[in-house]
Amino acid sequence: MKEVVILSGKGGTGKTTIAGSFAALASSKVLCDCDVDAADLNLLLEPLVQEEHDFTGGWLAFINEDKCCRCNLCSQLCRFSAINDFKVDEIACEGCGLCERICPVKAIDMKPNIAGRWFVSQTKYGPLVHARLGIAQDNSGKLVARVRQRAKQLAAEGGLDYIISDGPPGTGCPVISSLTGADLALLVTEPTLSGAHDLERVIQVCRHFGVRAVVCINKFDINELNTRKIEDFCARSETRIVSRIPYDSTVTEALMQAEPVVEYTDGTASLEIMNLWQTTAFILDSKNGTYNAGLKHGSF
Amino acid sequence: MIVSIASGKGGTGKTLVATSLARSLIDDYSVTLLDCDVEEPNAHLFIKPQITSTEEIAVKVPRVRQDRCNHCGKCSEVCVFNAIAVLGDTVLTFPELCHGCGACSHLCPRQAISEIPYRIGTLEKGHSGGLEFAKGELDVGRAMATPIVRKVKQRPPGEGITLIDASPGTSCPVIEAIKGTDFCLLVTEPTPFGLNDLSLAVEAVKELGVPCGVVINRAGKSNEVIEHYCQEQDIPVLLKIPLELKIACLYSEGFTLADGLPEWKARFKQLAERIMELTGERSCNTQR
Image (cartoon, rainbow over all chains, first blue to last red; front, side):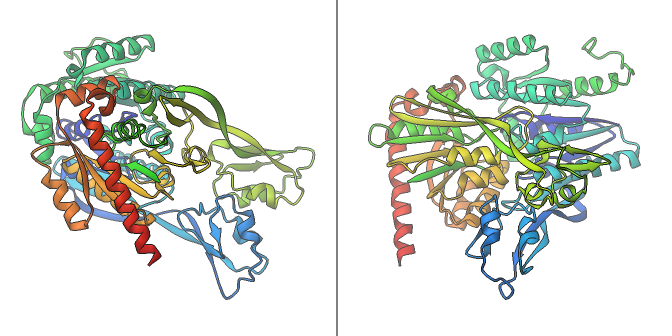
């Protein structure tokens, strides 16, 4: 089983559009939405929820007012400024439990914090593992790890070839959690200054964690000068560009219909995304040394 | 007045709105722009500031004094983040997991743990044509964005208008950026993804008790997707930026709307005035 995670650094470059199309194109796979605080892949795949679980992430402090002696020690020692006027600010509390341990009258209890929910669903393209982080919750990285773990389990049980993960934007905690241990990161960028800048950072993150990265330039023809800058940078950093998807208004039309674009039309963008999936699958397979003959890229 | 700019979904145009608003207001107000999208900060590409100072941002992580430690294991028992472990007669620390709560050092029976700084990013300050600017940037490979957001926001409350460019999503770094601001401008696009993520962002903003309004970017014939929702939720739609090639081109080259299409300056000024009206109304309500 091989896992590809789709990342971008910058948001809105087309990660979910590509993941949704891969869902329709790949056979023998589990789909996995690692963007747990703004999950959108489910909007394209019409999932039928089959399993639903609470995600308990960390702890929250509760002060028992009857026992509290109002010494204020907890508030003085809390590094997160989460205790004010003998009350816990649930958004600020990181659940470290120092207050519980130092309270001289044992007035503080730590309770498990339900930080979100995660689901296994059936879609017409195969199983989807997805999640919803509670609003204003910490621990998105742990929830991503949980979702990926279940996706791996499903792939192993079903003898499935691929895990296709739609990743979150950024470079921080949930991105690192989506990336570590994956076989390949597909980085989707766009030819804007922001897209190029964020791509450079996310390439460094992949390198830092030793995950091989390849690049797809989405809407490459809206600013060909910036596309060339991205190509130059990728060449310098020895990162392979595997696809250039043209701007195609049917991509937005498909999105409005909540359909993967490759199912909606066979326009220029759809055709390129089909090629991109073939290339991606080829790279994933070739790591095993099993080469599929007849694909257009020679060696990776 | 402090206005945060957030979105739920990434790539909807937060930075374009934040920087265009900043550039439109500098004629009439003293304006500070804080880039709190510390994982992927981009506002500097549009503002092109002159950076006058750079400082390192660090969190505190434990350091164990071997001469005092008797390997009792208390530190590893109290650390809920698994950032410190005692194996035989060695103590291992994992600074990247540490939240800096201080439990290990405070509760060590032999005072063997002190705290040392651990760099996670940088804070840059500068200015650009009368605009005060600051930007937080998380180091590559570091996970914890929230302490950097906190640091960027930690400035003496100046006169005038402070604009905060937040990261996408609804988790901790976003909450930290929006928390305590007077108004949150939510930038969205008229697609099912834009709507879904807007509704998540609205929930987050409501939880924080910050009033909000919506900017529809890439506006066009499907605006009603967003307008209908905003009407239902009683959230004002304050500005629409149409889906136009010339706007997309300006954005791709790193120009704000105020710099590239001067007629937009007046629209962004109006936007700021609407926000002032809305927050003014609110403070009257709270006084009542």
